[in-house]
Amino acid sequence: MSKTVSILLGAALSVLLLVIAAMTGLISLNIGSNAPEKFLNKGKLEVICEVNVNKPSDGLNQPFETSKLTLPAIFEFDESTGAYAGEYAISLNRKGTLRVNGEVLEISRPAMFKRYSLVITGEHITLNRRTGEFKQWLDLEAGKRLELIAGRCKRTDNAPF
Image (cartoon, rainbow, N blue to C red):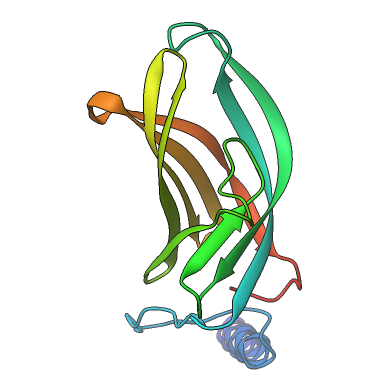
């Protein structure tokens, strides 16, 4: 066989394999598609997250204690609430308000307690449904922000977001 025929045959076989993989769901080919992903915004979304916690030990100027943690989070779209179990948790018995911004879910609630010699005025978590990225931070007095947790989540039923 000539070189040209071999190259064309190899290219055709590669294209065929790509088409089969896309049809079976093994890969996603969004060629020329700028449409945003569609996410289900009803019912309940339960995730489990593997995160790194960076917590001040004795004030904000000291080195932070770092630890790994596995935590669940629940987003209830029909009630516009959510909760998670972690550091300064927005717990199931005192849920936060859920806001949906496309692929990003945010749960927040006001707070008023003192830690690290500062008044904490709010608690927030976000989940990026496209990447699985999870973040948690606290709003502090004087407009400051203390980022505590970052990690990745996946659905408890292993389905895509």
